[in-house]
Length: 353
Image 1: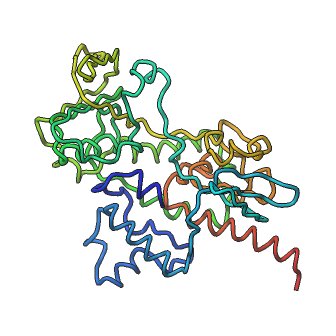
Image 2 (image 1 turned 90 degrees about the vertical axis):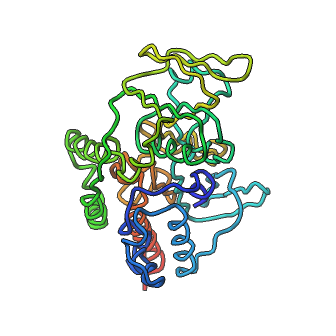
Image 3 (image 1 turned 90 degrees about the horizontal axis):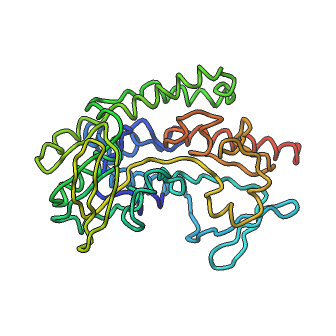
């Protein structure tokens, strides 16, 4: 959960509700955590980042999960096992490895946009999460989905003098997203893990568009009142034409609608794009050249196992084979059950009763 602790801003809210919990056994759910606190979902929704992290800590305690406080810098396949080398030079040997990288290393900065911006003039949203220096600063946020508008609201509340939002599309509507169809679809995948792959490309595209439209064409309505300020300027259907840093360190930006704005900081809310070659733990070792990939994604079997036996990858890199839901925490229960089922079946074959 380090990404949520270190690469998301204080004061943010999650788009998911209490039913998107972590427990594949459906015991230590968010609802169970609320009961232990004498609360109900209405007391905590929308879920704040702080609340979600307290649930995570509680879940870890209930499951007696102990994490090693070390970073793995390199992962290799050596004969019949894996060798994970820590930043301290220690080596952890394992028969199986599960990699759940999330999306930190997949921050997407479009090449055409990057070419227009001076070096060092911008930060992706996952990098710019400390707003303590926002007072009286002027910002340009490139992007027009949930994160762009939430960063704008948080910057206003931190005292920003002006926040401009530029995006190539129409601005989304403030409306409640409907995720009710996602949970049963993902939970049922435990019994039929290949159903998404069996779909025609059109059927896959339809599901992806449904997910995209709920997440991208809508902005959570609890943001609307927080953005009612003359300090916010939204520029839909615009792009950056040029950006020049002047002698005082300000950025003079011209947009395609002819508008010229001067800002102190540029934030890119340009999303994430999977390419597992960007994962340092893989690029530093010998596994990357052994893993079958397609479009930057690992090719996975029904149990999230890659072409390298015993090596599993889930979370965002599983979206190509298992659907767009796997970029969300709602999918972790299904991943856990399918991976464990594979490990248990292998153990049974090796040690028959």
